[in-house]
Amino acid sequence: MNQIKTFFFMALLTILFVWVGHFIGGRQGAFIALTIAAAMNFFSYWYSDKLVLSMYKAKPSTDAELPDLHRLVRGLAQRAKLPMPKVYIIPNDSPNAFATGRNPSNAAVAITTGALDLLSLEELSGVLGHELTHIKHRDILIGTIAATFAGAISFIASIARFGVLFGGLDDDEGGGNFLMVLIVSIFASLAALLIQMAISRSREYLADKGGAKISGNPRYLANALKKLDAYARRIPFQSVNPSTSHMFIVNPLKGSGLANLFQTHPPIEDRIRRLEGMAM
Image (cartoon, rainbow, N blue to C red; front, side, top):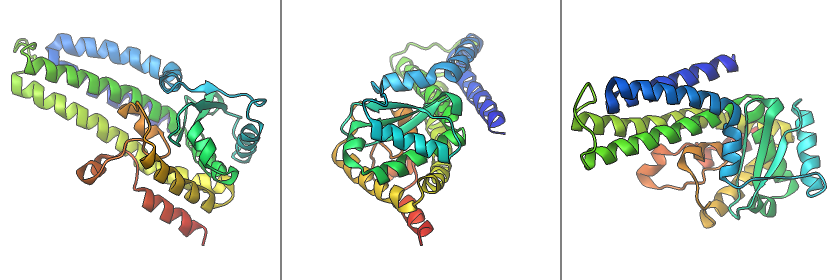
């Protein structure tokens, strides 16, 4: 069922991508967008996890380097009935973590040095249990594909707005007039963001619940989320690509007021309250 959802999601993003291409460049633009989308679908399925890991300079970790961490991941993976994922370390002081990979047999968990320094082993078990749940539910492929397409759609939309503002787009062969291209480019950027939100918000609650069960105590993850959120505000994650923000366990991009409506993560307070309710 999850594989069907993944292919449906890839088809939906392809249609959105081609639609944007049509309004920007007419039939020729739609054809170019379709060609790019086909290449991106192939790339997203096989290589997007490597792209995201390299984007954040994540380095593979060995058992000899961090034996306690690998022992913890191995034990949690066995409890979740999953293969042992690869373990990556992100050299960043901002505490955070994410999982990536196309399936449980080709999965990886990445955690920042800030999170390793901040969290106890119990709290780390809650965070890693959360990420392993994403792997078990096969959320990671959909999330990584969403990151790839959202980034590409936003990039094309930015080019369209730039072209409109500086007169680089002509009104010929269905290419769209000035106002239409501008509206479509703005809508495309918003659609890419809404796709990320739809994926992330519902799945985060399920991953929290699964992480609590895998780690053995909901308070482990609840306490970890409290720390991660507080320290992430004090130590912002440098050079975050907005198209990948939904992959992290806590939102590395902090907003306030109206910006909170468009965050890819559920409110941290609500997540903590649900976890603490499970512990009662």
